[in-house]
Amino acid sequence: MKKIAVCPGSFDPVTLGHLDIINRASKLFDKVIVLVSFNPNKSGAAFTVKERMEMIIETTGHLDNVVVDCYSGLLADYLKHTGAVAIVKGLRAVSDFEYEFQMALANKKLYDGAETMFLTTTGENMFLSSSVVREIASFGGDITDFVPASIKDRIFDRLFDQQKSKTEE
Ligand code: PNS
Image: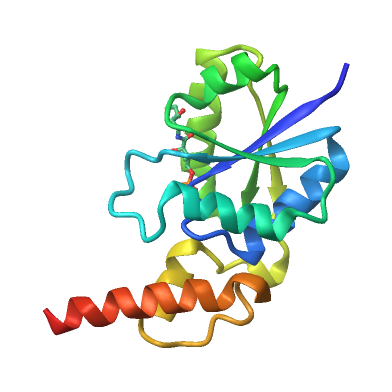
């Protein structure tokens, strides 16, 4: 039977840190579903779900066993429906751990088949997050080292314009 893993997240937008985890997960599983999910603790996304999916599709196109999907329900239910056997997440620092550990236990409680696997992030991505990218770009900073070249301008233009129209209000 094919082993399917799910890499869930907000991906607002996808970063090189996410792509490193997706790339490594694709070597461990037969199929990886990158799932643009809804995080109720985060409001006011910079990119629509469709835009986030487009950017992930564009930057994972070279990985044959990676597909992109979105879901607005519980991750545990998505695993149940798809037959995925694992949730794969990146861990950057101890500060990530408490939240991720709680999520992993909650998902396992909701669906016993939901096993969470953590991949440690690489040293250079330790500080990297979508929110760091959003903040740097919105103030006109250089995000070259943080996001794939093919989507850099798209991300920069949107965030810079958004910030400009906020400060002009
Ligand atoms: O990139 P993020 O925002 O840290 O990802 C968090 C995400 C979206 C994976 C998480 O909020 C999630 O799983 N949302 C779906 C709803 C759910 O199943 N929550 C966990 C059960 S308590």
